[in-house]
Image (cartoon, rainbow, N blue to C red; front, side, top):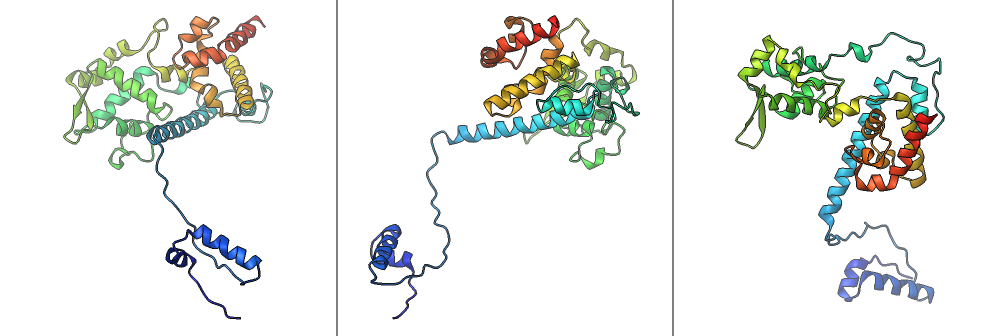
Length: 314
């Protein structure tokens, strides 16, 4: 008996056979008792398949899904951190359990000292903080860096970390800050300048510098109680009826569990907050809320309206 070391891939090429055919033939000969074999380990055989025609659309959908999931995670963490209700009840409602009004164990229930919404700067002060941030630099800031500075993000430019406006709006989302900046731009308090490489830098206008000394013009940028806000994120920052909001989260958790999908697929937290704030009791009123859309309206509209109407009947 004589053992030989054979490179099957090379042998298959010389015999003009596929590797699968040669291996099958060796196994057949071994079963017939004509030879013995002992296969050694080898690298995986990898083949690059041609991409499907909708590869670009698939990648875009995956990226959009990933971005939505990350945004939902941030919203959920932020909402939990900022809630003034029982934290155990908050988590229980998120997971679809019963409502807990007071657990007597979390920091909110034992009434430890903490900042409330009233301690946060009002809209006028937030607009002024944006102007002050831009006034602190002669070269201006891009939109993204401006948001990072105001939110106190770790990846904010190092030279801005020592300014008093660093982290001044840490309680606001990047979208909310973007809407505040847009209000200032529309009022000609901030101007955008395009750079040669295609970027945009924001600068204070003369009108904006005047507002630093006399912030009274900023009051015109603050929506009144009767004025519908165009700031979707600002509406999302207000939970409206907190009890209805929790009831909507419980309903969403059940829907997501029944469909075996993440909760955000049913409705984002920001949508539920607006619904809890506006309390629509007709399909037309529900359809008018941004983010609902015809598909969600058709799928969940009747159930939501029934829940809201029953909630206020009780």
